[in-house]
Image 1 (spheres, one colour):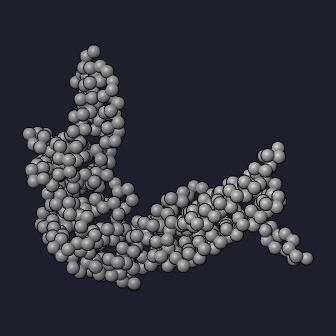
Image 2 (cartoon, rainbow, N blue to C red; image 1 turned 30 degrees about the vertical axis):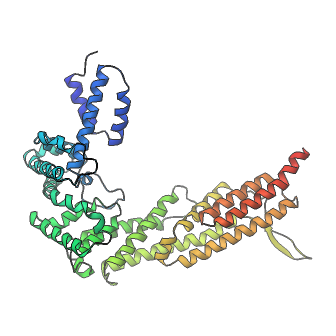
Image 3 (cartoon, rainbow, N blue to C red; image 1 turned 90 degrees about the vertical axis):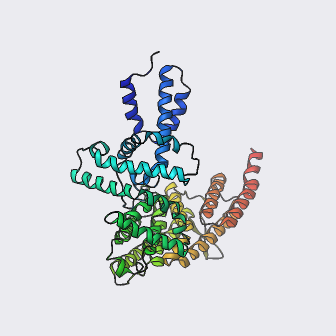
Length: 457
């Protein structure tokens, strides 16, 4: 069978540019098992594309994240994804002889030879942006003015690539416990970046921002980049203010989603709510710890308003949990002594799946938001609710087991299944001992109640 034609190769090459890295690996493994000349030719193309991407990942390492949006939704500097492979091909075609030096680095990207080759390829990328702008970023139906500005910004970023490479290597230390020497290097980096091009300092922090999965950590770099940046009045008037503004905007958008939460709404996944609350808690805590917020300043007021609204939502969630427990542990009035009555488990009253799901959502939040509750000032209320819920479930099961033993339950198997659901709910609030006791009591009650009935049958 004939090999792939030139036309086939051209089409496949364009298609492979758009294939994600993970899919490329899967495709390579699948094609490698296929017979025939065309399959071997395609396998070779896939291998070459994989090698090319690995080289690109090394050479453009400090700038690769600029070609994808942040997963947390916080606004940041980014470029269209389709620009990256075009830019790499244009830059690498100018330095073909150097490319093999990027192979097989295996974690030694800080090797001087690899660094030198990578920096050279980034310089080639700058030249390609200047010489072939329409190839790198083709004109399209979008905003032409934005494309032109994007090309200028892209060039500025690649001019900073060599300095950014060193900065990214030391980034973990800078956002943890930097030494005085490391802080001095950061300030020197920001100053030197400013000399490379206009707004070079903020642009360097934008590049570093793309490497931070936890967005609020950028505040540490912003504050450490200047000795006076911690004060809101000073920072709010500087070029670095946009980082704080973006984090505040992201907090406000999440607060709006949090405030809209209502228990029992299936379209509102509880995982998203937990993530939003924890994200806001981390970010607001970092703002307090890092910046000297003015209570009457714009940022101070926005942070205070966000806390208040989240606190109100958490208070509503905690208050709703007791009512949700009422629905999954129905009670009824029964005779006690004389004319007196008391509350007892209504085990023959059905419990809806919706009620169980609502309780699950609420107790999941109660159990997982301990840190957030401390930050928002409602940990005491949360802790009291955990204690109350644990005691209520334990007491309910104890009484229910007695009713089972007395033969006063129409559906023993259904009641035992409900005990298991209650035990699972206790685990959501870290009441493992209470959950174990519920399961032990349920096992004993099942052995005494269901097994004899089977034997009698």
